[in-house]
Length: 358
Image 1: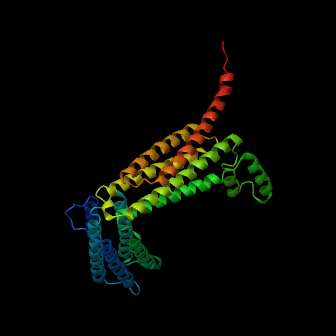
Image 2: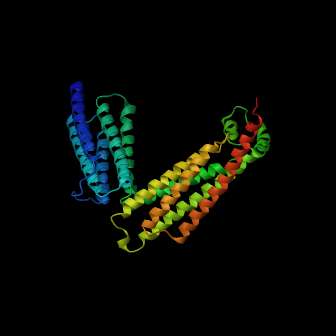
């Protein structure tokens, strides 16, 4: 009877899982503009209902093994609520741009994944004498709660989603800048190593980590400092861009036209491209420094900054302050470029001198 009941539960579970998978396939498509848009608050409320259902699943396992019928009814109710959550979330993406859609899909995926784990473990635990397995169910209920609670932190509008993405990008650039500032010239590194060497094992993880990037020559250190100036100036541009967009939003509602969100998406995409180049600058500073990679990243940052300025001008949000910080970045790029050109010339001189004329 136990084996037959377990197979019955597995069949029911698989049917529910297949239904959810089919629904997810539909949700991957862009919703029709004729579909009525649902407020994100309704999705949050449905998430609260789902968590209550998850709590009921956990309560079934607080005593003896629950009856098959009770498990099946609870499973059906749970998946019906999950199905409703998916449909509501799909309707909430009407008019959503790529960034907002991505945020919503990521949040919903967490809810679906945690739900699958809970229900699979619930069915797997049926008839099992493994107490540890049964104790895992309350933990999985907690995972569902975390996923449902995260819905409250999910952006509800395109502008919020894009603004948050830009802010996160600025934070990432700040992290790169911090790492760059930790670079030290060879002489300073050797003094520090001798002072700390006796207190550290020669083969400790700390000693290996401390060696990375701490042997820059004076020429390499000069390039590193100028690159730091470029990243600092880029970070200022990003902050001023966010400020400019915020200022636009505070103006008359007529500013937010049908092309406003697509323009913001493009500004975000361009900003992310700069973020990639900032990462490239950081990676290229470690010895031996990659001069060609540094130059390529600089050129991309320069051209992308120009595109950002043009896009912001289309929105009539290109302030004097923004132009000023962009010019500051261009100035920093020129100084770094001049130093890299000089470094290239220095590197090629010995090669020319070593040429043998037959």
